[in-house]
Each structure stands twice: as C-alpha cells, then as structure tokens.
Image 1: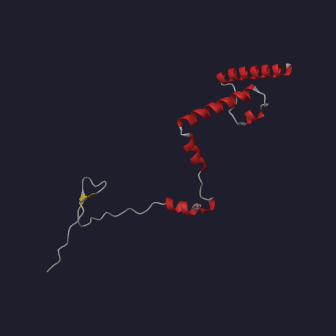
Image 2: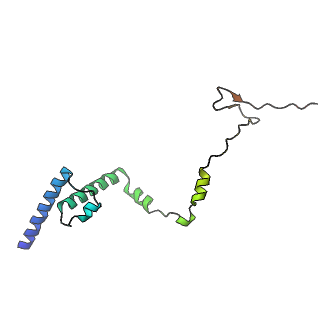
Length: 128
C-alpha cells in the first residue's frame, strides 16, 4: 500500500512540476536532441510532450481528422514513376510566346500591352 502512495505522490509531484515548466515555457522542443537527452521521468520532458500534444489537438481540431488521415494514408505513385530531374527542368524552360491570330466568326482580340489595340479578322477578297 505504501508503494502505491509513494508512486501517486511521485506522479503528482511530476505533474505539478511539469505544469509549472509548461506554463513558464521552460523546456526543450519535443523530439529535439535536448529533449532526447532528458531522463524519462524528467518534468521538462513531460512538459514538452504536453505542449506537443496540445499543439496536435489544436491542429486536428481545426482540420477534419478523418479527412487528414485519409489524405495522409492515400496511395501515392511509386517514386520510379515520377518525372526525373531533366524532364522537370525541361518543363521549366520558357516557351515561345503565342502568336495572336484573329479567327473568322470570333470577336476582335485585345492585344496585351497594346494600348487598346485590337486584332480583328479581316476577310481577304480575292480578285475576280
């Protein structure tokens, strides 16, 4: 029985100290090297874990958790099917400018940067 009381007292003390550290923001970032160096029963380690849990709770509360899980676990294409670096770099190269051309039956085209100029289709009359 005394062992249970000692464990309860130790847990209460750990929780109280972790709460003080949590409120004072006196703990390393969860998962960092400094956090990993702490002992498992360190109140600073618990405070960092509490902050991480609270941040995750807030993040998930803003998102739909089921939608997030579905997105995170949906099948992705294998890496070998994705485009390689030369293909991506070739796609990034600038393309030649599109030449505007008026089309019969369509309204006139405003010429970008043309100061109000329009390109209209003019039907050429053939000599008879």
